[in-house]
Length: 603
Image (cartoon, rainbow, N blue to C red; front, side, top):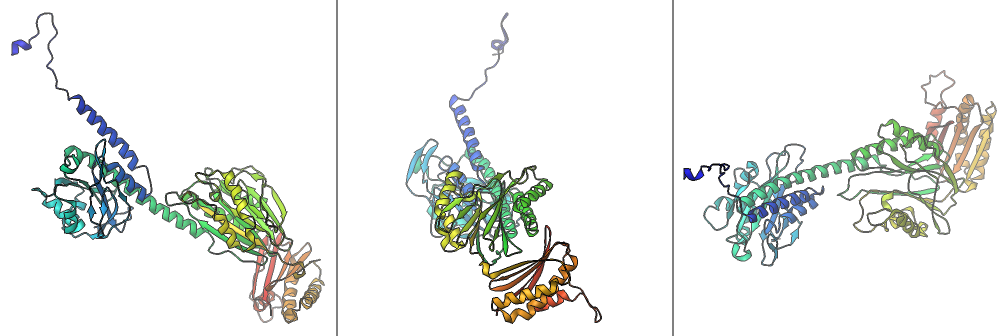
């Protein structure tokens, strides 16, 4: 033999032949690797827990098993920290098997052939089954804590005691019997990043029914790899769900709990978060009362979907409230918001916003737009119009001018501000959604702002919404000119006396003589204080609605503060008198001064 291996003269040395696997084995290896690659990508393709579990079932059945059942801890753990010993397990998904009334898996006889074996029982269920308690020291607890797969066994054969005990704890004796003798079962832990989150049970029917043998070592290795991917995907889905809930709660906490209800306008709002599979957005709405019974209406949308978007939304809403309270023109508010957004250092998070101020006395509305979808104005005759305002760049771009537009808003008209999630969906472009909304809102304002919101939301197609939605509806009623009195008074020593006489005459004309004495006293005190600080004419306004409201304005930015006075002090008691006589009072700093106001209930 040695002589045969020696090379002859002039010939290269002989190399012993190496045994190569048959070509069909190479094909099986390549096919299994391709399956692992596609299955891994599909398992990790979703962030929603339900979608992740569906993907797990679909990649395992029928390629690797005839049925798959996913058990998760109950309640679902907080994956940010160690969850401790599991109390219970609950079936969260099953594929290829029907669950009995007590959550017992049962495989049926219906099957279809597939490339990798028998396509058996394509039924998928996402309904959760009953909870199974985990007993310390039991087979179920051992499978969860060991973090290693249970060796595959064929039920009804020697050596199946450990797996049979585990399945009996999961499904009960009747559930174990329903699996049938000869079925091959493989139980694998679903390991998260910090703990085992549950179990994955794979089932193959007896070979005589499907023509496929039980799980072998290669199947076990494949299933173990996919179970590892599945556990990490479930962990990711739980983390995402927790982040979504935190961000959604954060966003809701930064939205107003209720809107003010000033006289002359009726308001309603709606906020719909995005679907569970979508990340939280930065939509917001607000309404800020202004002097002169006016009100600022604001709707905005921070671009992007993340916890950061919700946080930036809260900062911009607070800034918008502060700027609106200064009674700046809408385009000035947007300009300062743009500056504020740049100071936040979040250039990658731009925002759109539409800002409107409604005056129920003048029956006018002033609007400015920063890259937002156009609002809808409904006229008293029922016609609806998309207000194609001059749309400036989004907030945060910087160096862009904004323009205010003033429009008539007679009693009986309505305005709807909204975000793009209402009109733009996955299957409908923005332009089609805007036209559909305009047509829907025609004649819809005659009822109430709540009906206006409901009619607007009816354009949403079912199950096709990924973005959050904010709506703010305003129905304009106006305040009759006969219920308003307004004067400009020169800052002179005799001005307080003239203000008392004007107020008394107006109250007699309105039939409110009962309020005359207290009103004259408070008007005198506020006008006296204004005259002392003003360099320009002082304004005095009386408005009659369900209350009597008086406003005194001057060009001094110093807000009055109640002072402690002694028995011999002759000054400093004016605000104490107002606080004692009025039902409500307050002061507001404006861009060009301040306004001090008080209200009284009508007799």
